[in-house]
Image 1 (cartoon, one colour):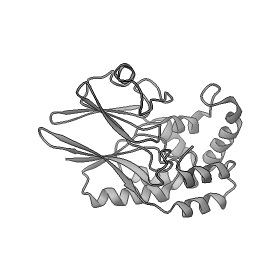
Image 2: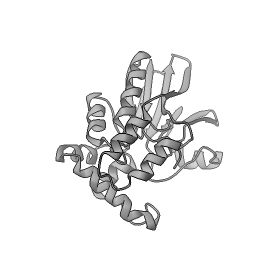
Image 3: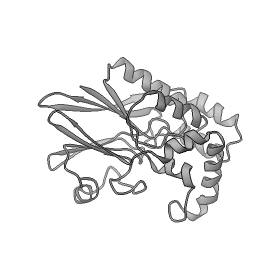
Image 4: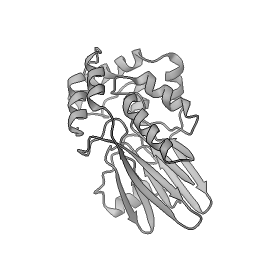
Length: 238
């Protein structure tokens, strides 16, 4: 069975289309979505509609929570909160009430079983939408913060930096970001998981998309932080 896990679309419907096309070419059986669908991109509604058209399991990310209730003190640097809430307000203006209610009602984790394989998937950590666990995290912290449920494979998004590690016989994977990569590679990222009865293969897939088209789309809007977002897209770094 082939499974794809995608995360951190961030309103980049152009990148999402490229990823979904690549997934389709690989005969994937099911796609799972690990949050951050709309916020900080030029096409939040189209990105959400594409996700909803998959008719699959979707969980909430921190940026989805921000759409519902705004960015709160302590969640971002103090000097950024006003601008980030302005970005949130712009995004909300592009969505209808049904879309916002959809984001509000999303669950926060997936517990999956396929044959002998148990998978625990979440956005940032099992207990938080906001905690940051980077690729260089100590094994002790990965065990205590991420591996709180019994599973063979742990999958998350949030940090926009894809990686694969094995800790005490368990696999932990970050999907990277579909729409806003931070690792210096100007390509979308997603996870492809090939499950066999007694084995599994984990692959991180990078997909080209038209970055300049997305930058042009942003420049055509009145998005309140367009220069920053265009720079991040250009450099694939925050």
